[in-house]
Image (spheres, rainbow, N blue to C red):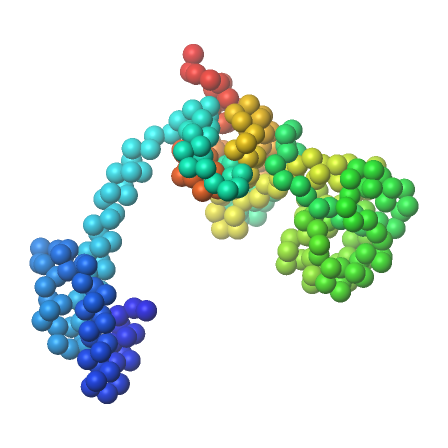
Length: 315
């Protein structure tokens, strides 16, 4: 609770309450009194007798704390130079082995693209099938009234298969799956009955939701097979050109992670919007594990258009 709100409340309270509040504020700010702001030590807290003075002193102390921590943060960021992709990935793997977690951490790519998703036809959307998967099992639901399509979905490994009966179950609240695919003829029924359940979770099969609708029975089986093997959605944030994509786990090792990351980068180039600004497409990038720090990556070693694309060294 900030000091101004406390002071406003205690100014309307009895004198005993005001005294107790001032004592609590003095105890809370005791470790910060050694800081100096604008050349003055924060001993004014000891002389503060009014709520307004106490509020100003607490605010000044907070500003001094922020200004004292900012230079250290700036030095840390300045010394983190971008590394070639192989060195950056090895650094992420090394950081993951320094402190073992109770789970297998995911390895993620964060990349800044030269696009503005707020403008028309500049949002990046796509899907990519990773050659070595994402490292977790996916429960897939397949919806179709075609018996051949349902058989293909079962053969491909779909966990939940059905037609209109499954749509009714979903409309009643059944969402025990991680992904949902359907044939194109089921899209209107799903939108009419199950959109309020699947829409907020991003599971509604639709034309705008890439890789969720199939034209025929063979296409439905192919979609299920891709999801079971490991597929990642590529989508920029709504207000800026930042994209986050997981591409494996720490247990995969360097070779498998590099193969997955290579597929992601090629898919990003294929999904480049036609209205994207001219110039460099990849502006900045970093790799990180779930609980580890980010490691900046040299974008030239990630750009498929660069001669240094995934090269071990500059030579």
